[in-house]
Image (cartoon, rainbow, N blue to C red):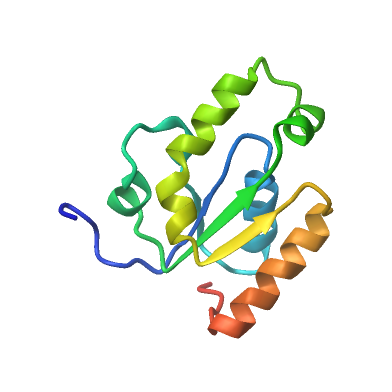
Length: 126
């Protein structure tokens, strides 16, 4: 692949709409982690997450269509949701941390991420 940034010290977070990305970012930032939401679900460029951030750690938060629209009612059809998943495929395949958020509270997602950070020796930056 060409035109990729060198690895950064950022934590990148991707996933379909309503997977919990914004909530997780707020929680991680309060603990001193430097995070960036990468809107990969809206890009046709599979490696966009690497081209604009190339994070130290890539977190993929996943959610089902049914739970997604319960969490935040959007005018999003199943076909549009499936398209988001298609656009996220490269990030999914390269994610360092994958969490299916349907059955989890925001606190449980946060705890899983912190546990994964401990296993990977990822430290806060601030």
